[in-house]
Structure formats: structure tokens, C-alpha cells
Length: 234
Image (cartoon, helix red, strand yellow):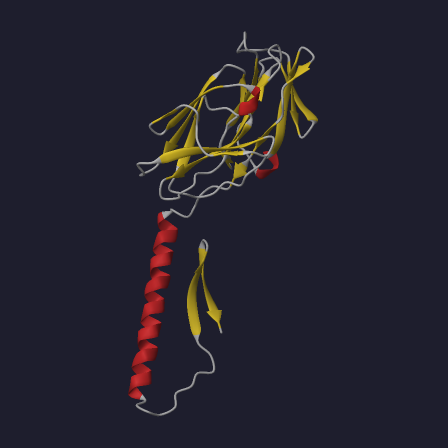
């Protein structure tokens, strides 16, 4: 189950920070944001929507995992703010491995490490890693490192150890956030001020013309279009 990442004043953190877990693991889902009331919602594999956590302490939902806890989770504040959704997968095979991969999307250009783990052994060697069912690495260290993540690294990953495969998990990649860059803030400010000046000049000319008909064949309007300021003729 895949849900898109959204920008919100609410957020959800998972501890331990991984998608896959063994049965009877202790997992905490914590809602964060400037709100006083929280609930953790769950959309299960069988299509059922659960509105409340069984063990909610403050803003944290504590789970002692079982197979039925494989689901999509998200936080909702009392005022209706939603966090991004995360996937949690519980490994039902007590002897099989799990893939250790990040819960949240990885930013382009960042580094990420994926590993394979058993319940009784955290560090494994001679592990096979697959990306979209294609073998990409047989690493004796048991770890797959990507030094600079790109969009092409997005997809399903799984690991294989001693003939046993983990479940596959989706790793999402998001673009680097440049919206908060000081350069673009300055560009936005300049565009906004320019627009105000143009509108004031037009208003002044209209008043100067008294009751005469004042028509324009065209005008130029500055607009901010995501990360750039463009001049559009209308």
C-alpha cells in the first residue's frame, strides 16, 4: 500500500525507524506538531479503517506487533490536520530476515543504507539485495549503501539471506526542498513588490483620465511560478 507524501503541520515518527518489523516487536508511533489532541489512524491489509490506537499515551501509540499490524498509519490532530502516511510491515516468519529501510522518503542527494536482519542476529554477511526484483548487490558486509540517492533509486527493495527472502518494501525519493532558500525568498519579495507598484501605477493613470474611457491592449503581470519569477503577457 502506497500513499503520497504530503506537506502538513503534523508529522509522524516511527521508532525503530524502519518499515519492517518482527512479531512481538515494540514499535512506537509518535505524532508531532503544535496540537493538543491526537489520534493514530490505521488502514489495514484487509481494507479496514481503524480510528484509534489500542495503547495511546499522550501523542504516542505503542504497538506490540502482530501480523495484523501490517498496515498504513498516519496521525490526525483534533483540528483535522493530517501527517504523511507510513507503511508498517510485520514479518510473520520468525526465522526469516527483514529488510531494514527508512520509513519516510529519502531526499535526492542524501545517503542511505539498507541492511538485512534476523531476529537473533542483527548483522549479516553474504546478503543479496534486490531492487524491483533485480539483483543489484551481493555484499559480504550485509549492507547496501547509496551515497547520493537519485529518483532512479526509488522502488521496491528486498534482501535474501541463506535462501530466505524478506518482504519487499517501497523506498520513496523526494526532491530537495529549495522553497525555503533565501535566494527564492528574495525573488518572491521582488516579484510581489513589483506587482503592487504596477497596480498602483495603473490605478493612478485611471484616476488621471477622469471619466475618459481607458483601455489596455495588453498588460504585463509578474507571477511567481514555483521556484522562478516569470513575466507573462496577457
